[in-house]
Length: 481
Image (cartoon, rainbow, N blue to C red):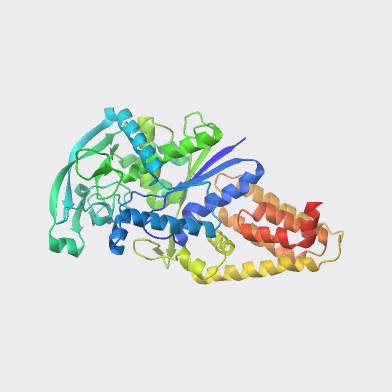
């Protein structure tokens, strides 16, 4: 029996989710699970929260609360948002729970011991504010020394490398820090020197667009196999070391997440999904701005150190944009899930709309007008479903309509058997099948329509599929017999 482990990249709880998060990280995995699990496959779907990202501390300062309070606050909001949009995650992990903090540190201690032969330290100069707070990560902006592009945080979005303050020039600090005064301190930071692993075949095997593959090939050739392991930050997983403010480098926390997820899957199914002989198909979903970390750096660390296997498959989404500009939580520029929920736009309409604009090859623009059009379609479809109850003829003897419905079902099966799952094609088959409801002229055909609609499209529009099962009276009666 085929087993799948689906993992969505961890959202940072420094704000609520936007439509791009839903489209890139969560909906594809949810649809995949909802389609395959009723067909006898073992499908586990996990995610968690990127709780040590210092973007949380930036948001916390703006709101005059502690970083911990900010992280917990937005975790709860994100949970509610995912629930509203029917994202059926088996485990949504809060790594700030005391037991998981303990487990994370235990894993890190084991990693430090196993990797000690390839760990080394070097001096990195860090800026400190007047109150002796390190200004790193999202507190630090400037230009990348490698590609000369504007950058901030712990990695350069343009060239994909992880960065320390030593990799930035033309620093740009908040005016309040400049006014108070900034000092620089040399700190000893740990790095991994990992044996080279050529990822060319690994990259080639991924169901990703040619432009993203090309970027990955370049990053694969440019990597120096030296990876930052610790950092200086005001927020993060403390190492209890003698170095003030030293924390585990948050970009690598996905390694710890992967090991925790492996333990959870093992407890449920008796198999480590990341062992070299595992037959579990592991799939990680995220946006293309994370390929440098998730498709190059971390697999290189894993394969070079032989800790465990990387994810078998990466689902890498292009950017979701408004008028060509990428949505961003930190820039407060997005179509927010909270706004969609407040507008009472249904989950099914949103899910269908996202699939209608899906593209594996280019960035996609989203807009509220198109989303509202899908809401109207959903309402009209539900009225069409209710109108089936007016049919009195039990069997008209027709066969053409039934054949068309069966043909669409076969096409959907073919879509989901493909390693490169085309969600837009799935949406097109959904629209094609919905149009057939207006040609149904007998109860036998109506029952078949509801049966196929629920069996093949509940993965996309679960609420409407359930509505059809519950509200077509003779279908409900027939299914109970």
